[in-house]
Amino acid sequence: MPEKKTIDKARQAAREGKSPSTQAGEFVHEEIEHIREGKHGARSAKQAIAIGLSKARRAGVKLPVPKAGTASEETRAQARRDLAKAKEPSKPVSAKRSRAMLNKLKREGSQAASHTALSRQARASARARKSNA
Image (cartoon, rainbow, N blue to C red; front, top):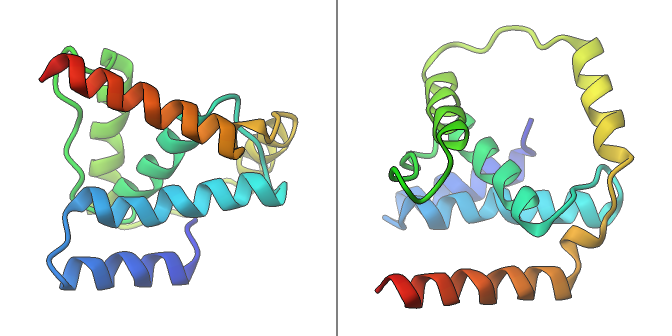
């Protein structure tokens, strides 16, 4: 569950007419902070970003599903499920599953949120954008 301040910042960005990706950036930032604090870990910067985008979609940010060919079919299906989750009323979460998932993520490293890893991810992403344009 995202923190209240993150949801508030995203809603503020929406009111200001900012793009959905800007709104989702708040959730990604929160995710990176969580990894740095040691609340849980991630295997890569890409995974940390993916978790943040998933949280954003579930919180109601109108972030579109990746286009075919840009992401795997599993990723696109998960994004569709996340968007659907935002529309339906929330059901109680299984405490046992939540705890198990958190413990699993705690065993992952925190290097994914390092400045180096994020810089490397940003450069790779920019390079991919440049070659596609």
